[in-house]
Image (cartoon, rainbow, N blue to C red; front, side, top):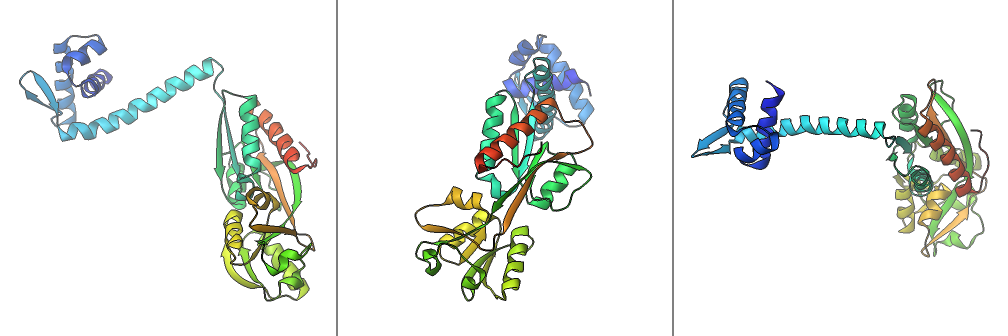
Length: 302
């Protein structure tokens, strides 16, 4: 099966006539017909029915064209990539973040990278923190924003930020009148809990145990914005990260600090053991600056 045969087939399928296909390919109509006939012998089935002076594609030709188009699309993408690399227009930053920062900090980071590198392409995917650590460690992303409790050899930590979790409830909730919420205040109060495999839920459980409080967990939810909306609808008070809470906050909800404080810590991560591209390295610095600015924090060690 020769490339010229495939080109002739695709041209006839695309332009609907041998004459137009011949003009596009810069060859004669008999040459196109010979190439099609040779291809039919190669594949072992009829691609076109000859009716009068025209060629009409068979159902098998339609199926075959799908595969042909996939092949040529791949070639077109390779050609485009080569042109972009040649002209210094090729750049791609792959960023993955946990849901807590997907609504607030991540858009700031992407916007800043796009402003600094208008011709670069940015990928933003949302995953759970453990999954982010695995993906960044495997080199599938240039940068990640997630919890990472224990250092990992295959991951480089570029920055760490601490914020405090907050309580979210409807404005007419009995506890909304308080300046801050303590564990004892939640005794007998319906609670929307983050999934128990999250760091926040595990730390909140420890706070409840230390205070001798048995929470009335009505719903377990993940991610944090799901817990927020459940709490806003009155299904129970929830404790989530402050970024999600303040990004989604409106007149219908009250946000109060929790005492004792539960830290919500996240880190800027990148693959370790290999040199990042110049673009990825610059993007990491931009990300760190935007995160610090967005949180009004400065704990950066990049």
